[in-house]
Image (tube, rainbow, N blue to C red):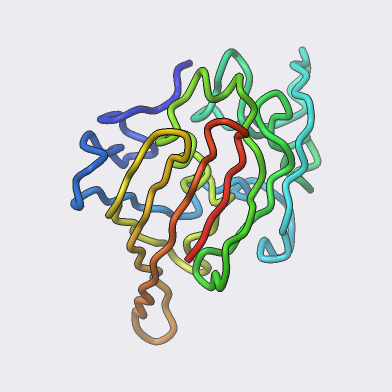
Length: 193
């Protein structure tokens, strides 16, 4: 299976074709989140996803994310008891789960390994991190992210205007801005306000 790219549908949403357009909108909800199938009480308590080697088994002892399979291995999966999620150590270091809705300062998220940078573009990696909610863009309902800046090179940067939707007695929309930076030499991923 190949990874989603520009123009492809991801869970019913189209990945934008023009990475420099200010009309690029990504919709994020719990349907594609890494915690979607976990048996945990409060996903807000998950602050780190450990990197582990993926071992294919003849017995279905884990649930993989079929949306993100690279070189025959999922980028993340859950063991059968569904109490924890793992990120694939072949492609990533441990990942710090960052809440972008209340980000006050720049934070290192983790590191991408060179093998993944050879297989996926920085845009696709960032899309994976956002859509799987390893970088949380909403707490309650969903979010809409509008790409407002994208630069490449040794330091790949994507800046977004975001709208975080939640409901009490009525819909509430909180707006914020954030950026994701990937150092393409070291693989370090960082986020900032």
